[in-house]
Length: 276
Image (cartoon, rainbow, N blue to C red):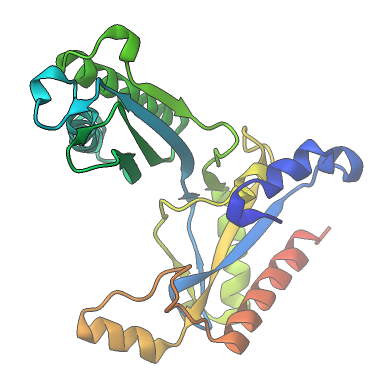
C-alpha cells in the first residue's frame, strides 16, 4: 500500500509485519511497464530501480533593490550557478559506469521584478543505485552549494541550508540474480521464450525494496508486465516519437491482456517458490 508516496512498505514493517507473520523466504513484486508489449514479462538481474532522495536547498543571500545589485548578495544568481555545477557531479565526479541523476524539480525565489530576494528555495530529486555512490553525491551537492556561496561573498551566517529527507527516502530495488534466473526459466516455460525479456534497469523508485531489508537478506524479484499494444509501439517507433510514460495522462494500458499476464506471471512465480 501507499507505494506512490513511498511510505507504505516502511509503515507495514515498522508496525511489525515480519514479527507478526514471520520473515518470508522470498519477496515478489510487479508493476505494469509503459514501453513493453502486452503479453510480455520484463525483468532485470541486479539493481532494477534506484535509491530515491528528496533534497531541499535554501540559498540565502542578502536582498535589496534590483537597481543596486552591488549592495546585495543575489541568491538567484547563486542558485543558477548551483544548478549548473550540480550537473558536473554526474559528468565529472562520478564513474560513468555507476548511473546517477541529479534533477532540480522546483525553484522558487523573489516576489517582484525589481527586488532581489533574501533567499531562493530549491527541491531536488537524486537517484543512485549503490549506497557509497549515494553518500558521495549527497555530500557533493552540499559541498558545491557551500563553495558557491563562499565564492559569492555570502557571510558565514547566511550559508546555504541543505537537508535530505529521511521520511521520503526510498532504497534501491535489487533483484536477486539466482532467484531471477529461476523465475525467468519458469516464465519462459509458461509464456514462451519470446515473451520474457531482460529489460534495462531504471532510475525510478519503488518502496517494494523495503521488503527485502537493507542487507537483501530476503531474496527478492520485482518484475514488469507489458501494458502497450505491439502495434502502438511499432507506430511510435516508426514515427520517432516517445511512448507516453507512467503517470502520463496519455498512458492508457490495455486492460485485459495487461492484467492477465501480470496474474499469470505472479501465480507461476508463487507456485514455483512454494515447491518443497
